Image (cartoon, rainbow, N blue to C red):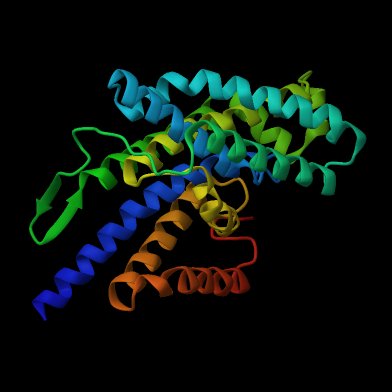
Length: 291
């Protein structure tokens, strides 16, 4: 009985830590898709790009991967601003963002993968850091640092963005552009400029998410495809544009996957997790924190 309880406790804790990672990779989609209504299916490709930036900094200069991701945040923000400007001029301004815009982001996903394959090949890459390997033991519960540190980084990322959106004028403008662009214009703010900034922020989060990913597991250029379904599922499950909902949904999905993998086998985890998603949305279509 005690062994079963220990197994259950470790599965739940592992699920929470895994959920922190899911929150980190989803928060950017919560901004672009949940707030701006931009279906950026290329977001996982930007995350993998962040992983390779962290890998280069770590392998070449011995820089901690998460620190490297923090340093790269401004570059990823500018990349996001540039991508949105192209998207706006080519599609959104003409009202063609639905299908053609989706094709644009699919093309970005494909091009990014191809470039990474040409530069780095298809071999898995990994990083080195003092917290990759050691495990904290709290009673019968194990806390692998390679999962704990990324989870803490994810919580800091979500918390920082929530404070920014709720406490600053620019943050409230981003919330307004998602709800009422006419009211935003009446406040003498340019919705396109606000959306450009918001999309830049969504891509900037990919830098940290990429570092978190490569800390947890080795990466190769196409691994981002494994997370496309999950990130949009978590975004919808949590409630469109809700950071608190994203965090709760990510933790919930992580726990469900961890429990399923522990007691029924890893191959069942994705099916059960998405089954849980469908049941939840059937009961509450707007998501956990949706209005």
